[in-house]
Length: 127
Image (cartoon, rainbow, N blue to C red; front, side, top):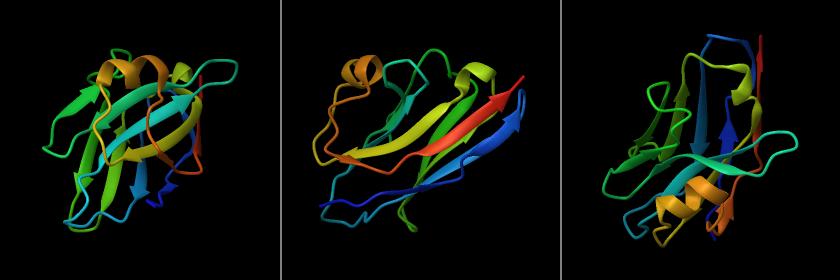
């Protein structure tokens, strides 16, 4: 069982920044594949960014150049730095993880495939 705990959501004006954090067990015996998934009101969930065990990263086209996913392996924390936020970034953001790799094409399109999920953190961007 992998437990995830997110923090860092909030309300910000358009153009502002937020950093989301996701604490996870980590550990040398876990190859954990992780991602940030979001669900906006009235919309399906979709992948925002993913981080693979070898350090490979993936981003949704809508956030490329604005969001950065990173991992602090010493602290076992996954981050999502969100800059130049737009009102359309308003959503509940979830940290997700799995011990098997999930194809980015699946993650970006559906946000699904991961077995472990955090409780979600709300991000609201006002215009």
